[in-house]
Length: 413
Image: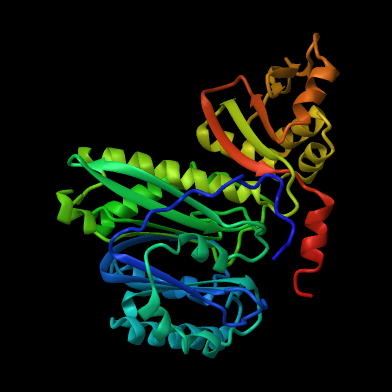
């Protein structure tokens, strides 16, 4: 974990209220890091509805396999997360570690193992010694409380420079419900149906199928719309838990995502997910600038998305941003290589509000000084219009600096 906090870090952290039905505790097990917490336990005193999306990597971690199997049951009583070791590419030893952890968590909480969910993050390929932390789960379950969200976000960090938390509220049947979320991630970020680790809890009473539908609906425009370095993790996990405690205050059960009463909750969930996803981009390893790429006028939304990602993932584009260079030629390159329909002479490009290219060439009134001023900002918007259709997409990324190489060159040291 870096000791230098990202210049894009928030000036203060959101204050997350306790959510009835969930308690949290952290511990220092010495899995990799010294003098810091590295295990987080979330306890649901009554079975909570659960939904999740996971990495599309063909080499998923053992915890991802474990969660996928348990997700079918739709109910959760415990979540155990460790940092410092991803328990990925660890073969039978990895599966044994998940079984040992799940058994200990189930005993500590008093539930079945298929009501336990797990996540691990850190080094790939190193066996996880689960005995380091399973012995503390009993005490963690007893001492867990509802006000430890920021502590929990810190415990799951790896190369993150700051904890990522967010909160929102919604209304169901006139009753206010709360959504709290945390996330970790700074590198190996190019998610597909998740991003690194992120966990959201609400006191709303929502059936697992409805929760899953809303989660899946919003993931494309939030967590799947961010990229730091184009690499999809083996461990990407995004889960939402609903304790149902708000039902005691008169909030009725939501059984379908199409229920009109779910609109406020769905909107709040989307906003919370976008907030956390952008925090991950702003903490990209070595990042100094946040970049928003918008592509319009593409042949389709899918095509726009592929073009936006081509731009966002280009090392040449990202290093130009790091150097504060309004080099639109690199944008043209990224559009051209994306493999989607594009017509050179219809292309237009903007850096911020400054149009730098139009009709396939430099804008006749282009101002280098104006473009340079845009590139000096911490947050930079790049827009490309292909002029051939109605497809549009938005992707968030960050710049690529020397610090990224240093962080990843020393990662296993």
